[in-house]
Length: 514
Image (cartoon, rainbow, N blue to C red):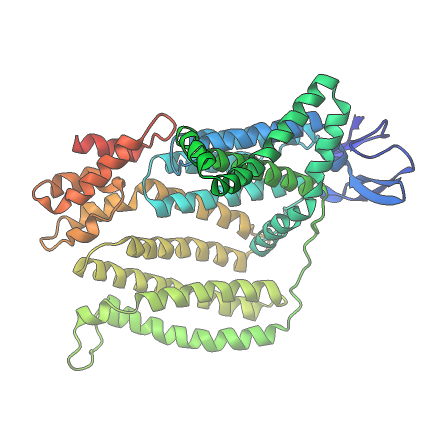
């Protein structure tokens, strides 16, 4: 085969590809990336008609890589992640995932895009953050972030995503995840074809492996049934099971099989090019409608902003009787946060759904400026509230969200004033960089460092923090026995670590209590 534009393979198809015969093969061209014609093969065999893109055919041709490679990837995933939420092997798993994606693209003749360096670096940094923290919330957010970055990178490899916005990306990720389910028969068909093409010894090896995988759950079911049927057999199997942990074997087997099929079906679906690449211009709405809605809201926002400047920031307004400035300043931050997020959604909707209008842009600029004042008001109220009470993860998250909204609204303003501004790209970088800062900051350590400075620090809350807080919290709790439970938790996690589950935060905490 010859290599064509954009990494697609063009040219005649020779021989038996996958489980497809070479009878009735016709080639025509469909729309591909960047307007390039993508060869699509129309195959008729035994009254069954199928259409395959060149990537799908390449995947079937390269089954010697995709079947053993995907299985090896699934085994390595299980080794890294089985009963290991945040060990150092998570970093190795992410590196292996990036290597697998790179090799898969190479086998499919898809050229790596330059922008992938950002996604790769972000995923690796999130992986490092994961094995450096014990905070379950950060660990979950990190893994969700890695998944979204990986899916975004795969989509931009198979499609021209230069004009895609947030909604198109999220919709495509969901559609890809659901569409991959329809590729369930493909692994079975490709494995069967792979086994047929291999030599006798390799064929017997693969049949043996497949038989083992199928037999394990059947063996477990039969053993349970026979153990309950005969007391002597039950006692014998009970002794055997104590020496051989069947629960662990079942867990490992299920993970290997599940990951193999999920990854194989995902790549297979992406090779089908089933998503619509083009993005329609939905800016057809009458701008008068948007101007009316935004103008009425902006009028209220202007009045509210005036009160914030003179009442909260400058303290010039007279408060109601019996109402102190401290009471006034320490309430309303969540409501203001909600309005700020609502404004972001509204401005993006007006820009996406209505025809361009100078008047609409002017109103949206004022609306955005008022939102900056609301964000500052919410941040100031939250800071004053924290000074009066304790710091918590939720309050740190509120401040982080307000900072993120400030950065995002700066991009929105640029989009309003300059229509060709790449808002999604800007937002992707902004969210990723700011989340990395939050992830590496270890919020529990910040919480402990701040709260222990107060005489009335809530020790019961502090003892619930992760081991991230240990460097600040352990010396404080050693003064009395109120922290015994926290110390025991640290020792338990520290002793349970091994080279596979090594975690930096848990190790540092364990050293602090030894």
